[in-house]
Image 1 (cartoon, one colour):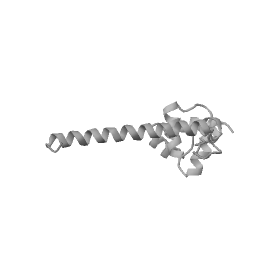
Image 2: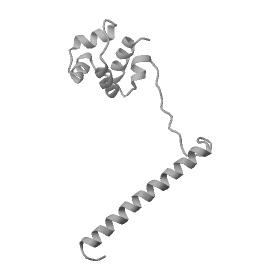
Image 3: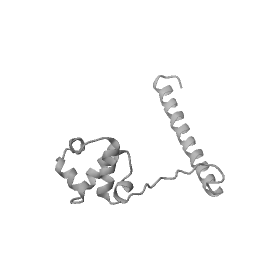
Length: 116
């Protein structure tokens, strides 16, 4: 299946007419017709808008495949020990920094109101 067939299939699957898609993209119905007949291809900004309209990835529109992003978790089986340690160090440093900022902000407020 090529991009033209995918665009037509996606439009029909979502129940939109070519006119409705054209209105959403602020283009002519003829442009949508050309894309779906293989006589032209949408510009990148329209492809991005189509991903939102059809709720698919650009990979699917362009290539016909979904590129699912794998988000690793902090479970031992997914992350090597070194990565888990690095993440813990980053969390400790970030927490310490936030605590220091809040502490000095509180001291500043106390000094401002003569309580320190």
